[in-house]
Length: 356
Image (cartoon, rainbow, N blue to C red; front, top):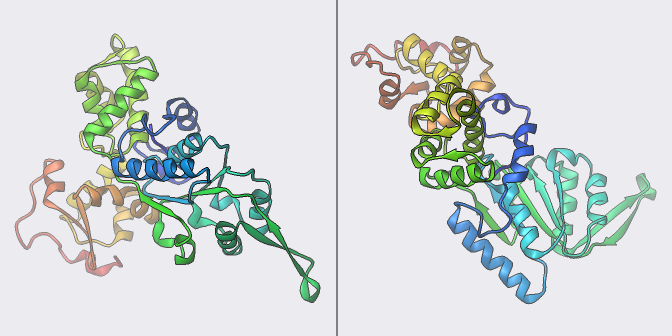
């Protein structure tokens, strides 16, 4: 239902990774809602954005610039397309990493039509010269194009038609205050509740012509890590299983059996997540242990453990980051069905030998 950016990190290869690969993008294009009424979840954001867009239409003006922040897969790209549709305007899509020079941005801005929506994904990764050019474009609808070099360089002002910039970021803290302050409306996308994800699964199943019952949708939603993109990906894999191993109808039993094949457990943990927890519990007694040591034990790169596995484990309350290293919580022991060591037996000091 609601999706966002593409990345080449290891998360993109995981069934429960929130980033979109090419297959996801192809399916998402067909599943995306077309207006705010179809968009599921993010109630406060939808209500506030609806007011912004209605007021702009009533004034006959372009909408204020919009900044959308939040984890991948929650609906930032979808909302940008809805903004354009609600305003009856075309949309231009690009990303921060694609704009390496101010000239790249000037070329895009100078070709915009009046009222057009410019969607800039991962805006925090834009180059600094382009970022500074964007300040003036957002505020004054003007850019200065530099012609020539050295003492003979001349700045030629270029007027721009009014447009709406929709910026999306997974790391709002990396945006400099001058850029953040130029957005008229800022919204943070929250993770979805299971009940909302059930509605996402039912809607997507209907569009994909897949028969699914309430319990089957609930089973998929419960393993989707609060992210619609993951819910849709799991639905497609369960659909495949149901078609091959059953009568094509998705029930709770079929969904659970399918996701067991794909190694996604009842809380949405996959092989990498469980590998991190098992190493932490079985090899290091629950910690504390340094990140580098934990990564070696799992057989993964340090960055993969820190950026791909840890955020969800921390959010689920299964792992904690401390100054001494990573520590498992009681919930982690319970989830893996293991018994915590007696008081004093855990944390055997190994964490002190390595950097956290």
